[in-house]
Image (cartoon, rainbow, N blue to C red; front, side):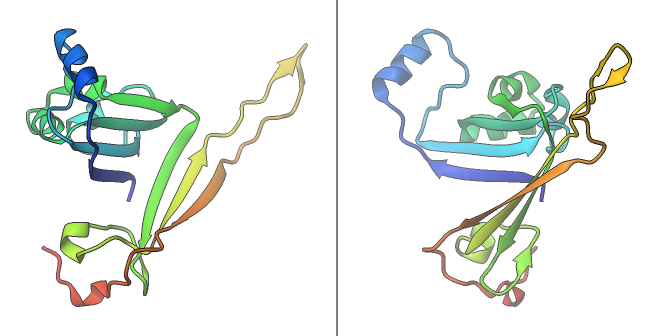
Length: 168
């Protein structure tokens, strides 16, 4: 619910791959299968949770096999090297998935046999700090978080009745 993890086919450029390999880049992909994940640091699972200390919305991208092995072996160096903080002002993120009939908090395309019809993304930004000049508040501060909602439609996805599927 707090991490969007995608395994995608993302062909690389052969010349760029050769240059990166010669420079000793450990995040170079060796195949066209890549893992891309979005999460708020501190809410991810596995070794990555402890690895990224800077708060905010993070994006991890790298070779699928290399990242899976790094996570299994708790190799935080590779995971941190593959992670970029996109928005430090993000306190929380939540993903929910529409199967064509109801909203779900989880989605596994292998289990359900397809993509969700839509994905709802809720992003919570931390309150702005209030400022003061000569002891007077200038305003602008807020004690409540700002929550933004984005609904992503996936028009080619077919409705899937997930109530008929038993998940392990």
